[in-house]
Image (cartoon, rainbow, N blue to C red; front, side, top):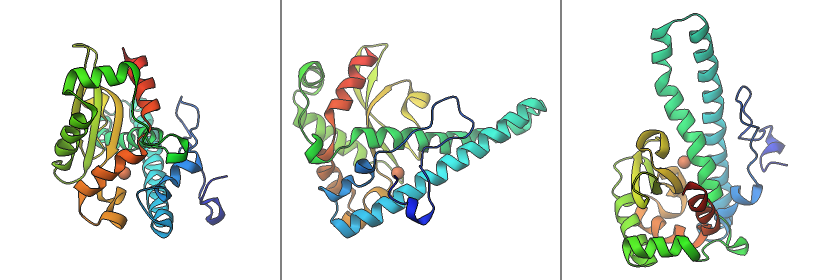
Length: 223
Ligand SMILES: [Fe+2]
């Protein structure tokens, strides 16, 4: 059951015409803000805001893919080109938020537990320590102009970890080639209820709910 099915909203990741199987968002991720970032009232409001945003981007992506299919069929190259920005924005919103949920967990499910093993070794090799990595990540991500995302990515060509940022809903891999390991949403809708416009405070707190196990899994698969 989805948190907002009682008001007629279905699963946010149901996609009609895509080859991927339909995705489901575990309610515990939708409500994870209860644990650290927000109090209970803010958590409910925030979950609803994010749920509606995701519902919208998935619907828009489905519509854009339908239009693209029609444009292919009619061999209308102008239409094919015109649809690209909608696919990038809404497809990016879908990819990024899917990663975001997987990257976060309540403290009771291991959120905030520090990384270990190969991932920690690689972070220490690259930045000296986990704390220094977080400091650099937060500085670069806080500096994103307008809306965007901060990333820890893996550069397969040079076999190294990198911090990156993207604008709007640009997905990391499609726009930079880096494999996304950890993505942090810095659109204001991710933090304004609790932190108003103070993005650095949100970035300081978000590490309390980062699920490093999923980051490590992605790191191991990407090498
Ligand atoms: Fe977002």
